Length: 258
Ligand code: T3D
Image 1 (spheres, rainbow, N blue to C red):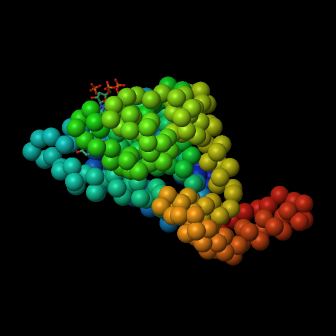
Image 2 (cartoon, helix red, strand yellow):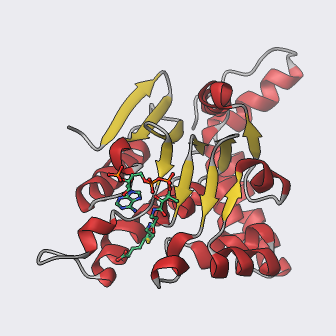
Image 3 (cartoon, rainbow, N blue to C red):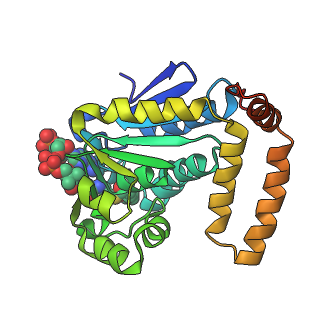
């Protein structure tokens, strides 16, 4: 059985975490497989948006804890460096939009993989748990990076220290995610967003993501300079020319993603 399901639906790559009996928690093989599919998303020019979701009642419960005990246990260092850090970097560095459809509980690294995505939708029965403190770990997979930036120090600290479950609705209210939607429309709404994005000027969307990434550590002057350089790159794209021409000719643009 494959731990990741990968489907190409028109220009959207749908990636489904597929170990539902353990709430899609990651073993090593699944983490490497997800990394390989993220590489495929980067390298295949026909893919212009990605949708990430989970099979069954959970989105992802983070590290499979049965893998960290026993004779063949992997070290925490190895797990973090080989499983999760590459996944987070591949999502953030992929210059194509990544939409998360969080269909159930997202815990530990599973929560932070969802939060690394560009647009996060969650079904109303989903929840987010920084589960790490409950087992004596720190919030890895970008938790200490994303949480304070998304919801501010006060909420981030409480979420990370206490490890409480935050409902999808509350997550929307505090700005942790984009939107909470009814469970039965989650996949459809996420796919509509992914499809819409896949028809847009992918080059400009990717450069916008590069700008968002760099805004996390730049000061205003540095960021303005960075915007000028990526705006130049955007203006050299086919899609910029097409967008302006279509506007002036009063027709719908046909973007090709380059
Ligand atoms: O060395 C390292 O660990 C470094 C890496 C760190 C990255 C991390 O992600 S650390 C955080 C690891 N994750 C957790 O600590 C979460 C553990 N899971 C839970 O706390 C709960 O399962 C949930 C809050 C996520 C959901 O609770 P609930 O009541 O809805 O479901 P459940 O009954 O606990 O789980 C259902 C099944 O999934 C159950 O198996 P069973 O009894 O039906 O045979 C449970 O054992 C299994 N499961 C859930 N999470 C994991 C898991 N099995 C292995 N690993 C898991 N993380």
